[in-house]
Length: 325
Image 1 (tube, helix red, strand yellow):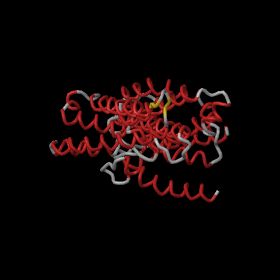
Image 2 (tube, one colour; image 1 turned 180 degrees about the vertical axis):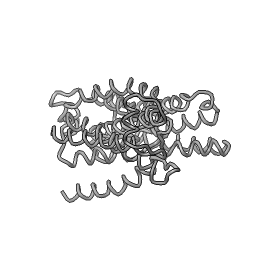
Image 3 (cartoon, helix red, strand yellow; image 1 turned 60 degrees about the vertical axis):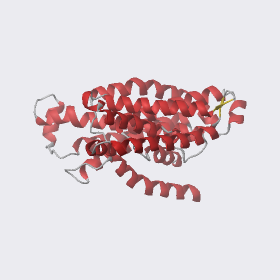
Image 4 (cartoon, helix red, strand yellow; image 1 turned 90 degrees about the vertical axis):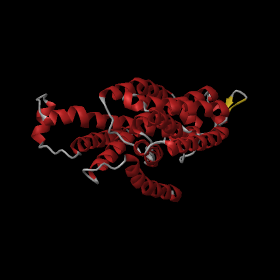
């Protein structure tokens, strides 16, 4: 298992190198080395202010979505579960579109991601409240509530977009398809502030997640307090997904395909599955972002389009492989 982790970590480092070199501005390797040493120049400016924040943001967002997918698939005992089941993406989209429509994002750069985060958290709160039946978190009601709330919020987004100007409509459209163009060091620090504690706690719940994959009755027999664990794990996984969406927009298939792919390599223990999925998700999104910047250069393709084109056929292959095994 350790060898798998080291292999994925090495792949992530290679992906970061590819992400750093991708873009319209091309520099010789010597220029990058000089920039890393702190020498001033165009290469240093692009490296420290544009590409490095973007690559690190992509790695964090991809890792957070992958870990969120791991938790949802464990709690729902369904390998097809993904982080946006609870209306996270629709809530974030409503918050972001509302910010754009009101002109708040033009007055403060952090207004859009903050509005998206608040919208996602509000959607999660509504879904959790509906799914709480008799003091228990009913996973069946949770799924249905997530679908219904997501449909309602999507309708609200479409209603707002009906009345906004063309430039706002264009901005909202590109945001919903995902982008890391607004990455900054401040945004990275904010993500680290709330993602690191959540990731640590979820890793600490690995043994309980292993038990819950066997069923709630079996998990209770093995000593897991199922309801507190379910609520905490669902909440933290939803927060990770909400934070990722607020920064990068709606990026699909990372939280669905990556955990499924890692699990098909034989990794079942969440003490290994969680960190390996984080590294694999980081690698996947960094590479997807590099492709988004180069496939139609100098134009930039939305990351959500790239992940869909790559994720759909990959998931079909993995699904076919799982059916055969």
